[in-house]
Length: 344
Image 1 (cartoon, rainbow, N blue to C red):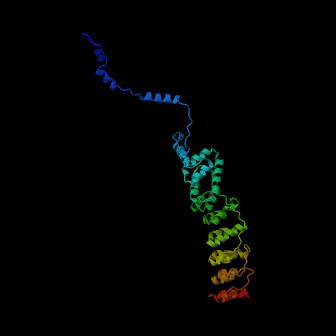
Image 2: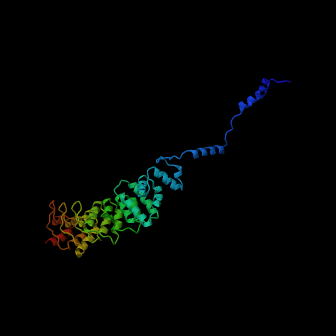
């Protein structure tokens, strides 16, 4: 049968052929193909410089141990490396990164210890008492051969009593240590660290000047530190004529605070010439040591004192009292007898 041209055309373009064309979609490239395609694009693209934000911590910069990662992240928060970084870590309570910062300094132990000493010295005039105390405790526990005397000086300077007491356990404290011309014991004196003062006074190689001793005596007078006086008496520059706020010399101070045993020891040393004192010194009220001893009515003390050569029995206090008047008013008549015999 003859088929016209029109029929042949429709047979070639049948409906089923149209459907196939409409439903056929381009195949999606596989994952590998997509990556290769991207790779080709990047390879063909011109090179461009990429600037990273310095304030952002990028993962590629955090390779290494967890402590190193912590160190780098904290560094981005405001802690730099080197000596300044350690100072920043102390100020910002980031003690946990100090080990990493110290390691990065790459210094021999003796130089590292010196660097730490300089860091502590820089904190002398700051208000970071708590922070530096924590840092010192950290340095003590580390393997750094630290300067015990400087650490104690720092603790005294910042009035860190607990830390200072813990450092007294060390046998490497120099009692004559100075920082910028200021003695360790005087810094302890300024901030009234009694335990440190007593500790240093017990050192046989302690060297105190007359002015140093006088300053310590005045502090001991104010705080009634008997133990300090016991230790100070052993110092060659100890001056019994140093007075307290009431004008009492050392013997009068002991009498006013009822330290009878110590007062008796001083009087006996005056008798033997081991110690010197102004026997007739009058305090702010005009009283002499003799007047004060008579008021106390300690026979042994009176007997010892009146046998010291050079006592003036005629001196008068501001209220008109004399040794003779006070002896006459004493309850123990033997006191009157002793004084009468000596004042003739």
